[in-house]
Length: 386
Image 1 (tube, helix red, strand yellow):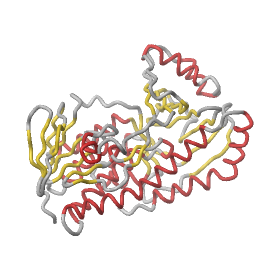
Image 2 (cartoon, rainbow, N blue to C red):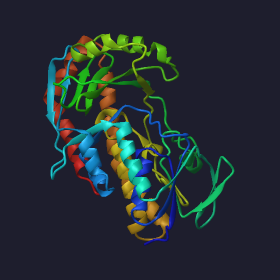
Image 3 (tube, helix red, strand yellow):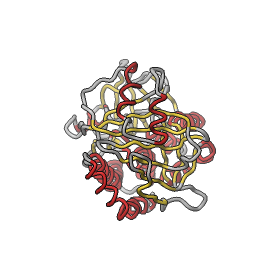
Image 4 (spheres, one colour):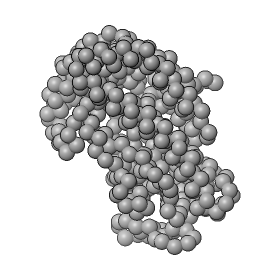
């Protein structure tokens, strides 16, 4: 085993906690820092495909995830009036695993955090990185509070605005505005919503993913100005306007929105960091290395995979530490590049539907090819080298 006795994980999201667990359960002394003062986790829900569930199994957290989450094995695509266009049965899972298990983001985070603490991971809140020293051997880091530390490895899972990535490569390869945004809200789930659903509209789409016995999250993806600010007090009215073209339960939910509705909005800023994903003893993964549109619901899954693959490469790989980090980056870039390109193309295609004629053409194409196309992604995600 390479000489990695201690590790600093930067970022306390799904990827960072997964990395902390992966190293800690192999005997590495792990410190995790998080710049937020507490784990009041933002976000709504996460659909976790079978490839992510296999990682969670190796991290020792699969049973509570399966227990609290909603299992589903299909997706349906509808037109704005909730007429079915396409049904797809996912070609994932098996061996006791569902194709997908979806749960509230806060529940997944709590499960991972409890496991990390049980393994002895040191958690330091309200702590941010300010610098990483150059040179051979372990990395000497400084924190914004003036403290310092020396670590055999610095793993940056610190999100889309990653300080570790900025230190490694600057801002040239960071997130860029796509011109689209995602609105989300957790609501009561109609009993007939038993899997992932999309409603393809004109100039945007809506949909839902179940995350609990009686809960789901509703989303709307559409063009939005990158620099637009939406006041929370206005969000109910703005989302209602954006959902006006949709029927079925989407219209009912839109009509029920109030100023107190817990609506979350975020601009889509996809990017994929080219290699290498490391510099010296520092390395990145998760949203620090790649952010994809949510169309395969694989963002958190890829972060968890990155974490497991990093620990395996560092602790079981061949050559020196930089050789092992380079091998990790090459392998993860290739896998994430597929997810990135597939999701970007899907986003572009759906958002190009700008007229009734374009909607009719898109629906006809999806009836012919949609399920076969998604099955390609299913098989890719299932063909997991981890």
